[in-house]
Image 1 (cartoon, rainbow, N blue to C red):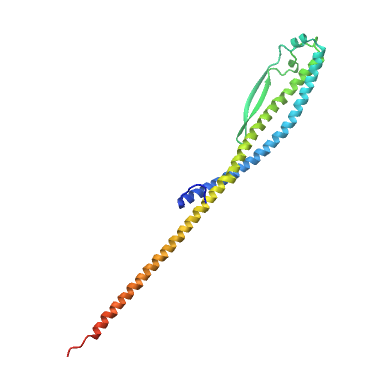
Image 2 (cartoon, helix red, strand yellow; image 1 turned 135 degrees about the vertical axis):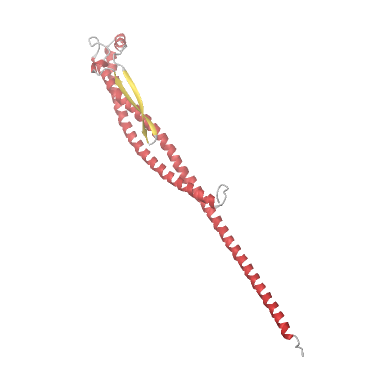
Length: 237
């Protein structure tokens, strides 16, 4: 029996069959989308793991060099050396569509391409370890931006995978079986009505046939009675 009250008519049956066909096609498309999203997600996760390891190594190297520089230089000299940066950076953000998911893309551009512009101080009164720390930070910046892209992409893909999975399960285990059950119920009711109509027509036909036979018998009997009475009448002399 269907879970909801439905009208067992041929129009409703045609409508349900159309909805079932659409739901099955949508289910296949959503499964293909889910599988492709999973493939994209696994690629992003692998890239995320490699980038995070590289960024952590770069930050550890920069931190180690900065710690040594802080030990060799006075705090005032260290603060003065890094107080006014010479290089400026512009960050641009755009979006890329991956399976109907808009993921961010970051791009940065420096105002000067000179490598020496990353050092905002002179080299006379600073430590070489400070140069190593600044150089390590400048090199890891690109990887940090890419890591931010990848982590945000993995988060958005995971959310889309979850939504797609829930839709696939809703169609596969709820909507499609419910429509199939309703179609089966309507088909059974229509077949039952068709059989009832057939039986009713057969009974009506039998009744009409019996009435016709009865009428014919009565007509024959009446004719026999009429013609028989004429034969028995006396003949005048």
